[in-house]
Length: 61
Image 1 (cartoon, rainbow, N blue to C red):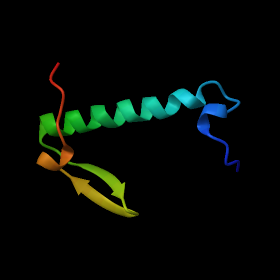
Image 2 (cartoon, rainbow, N blue to C red):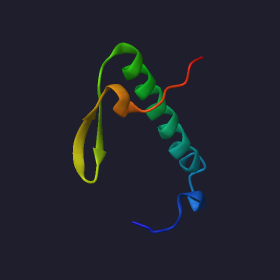
Image 3 (tube, one colour):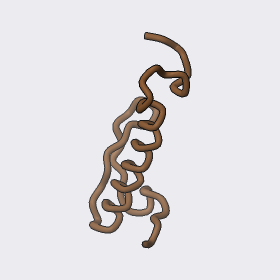
């Protein structure tokens, strides 16, 4: 594995993948907040279930 920054990747799609993952995570949080379900994330190397206010603010469309 290389320690080069993702912005220097040979694959042109790779730098955009981080932004896509962030958009997908935001959409998942919004859906969870709207439907009253939880999302599961890893924080400090521990699996954590988030729901309600722990999901953070959501955007209204």
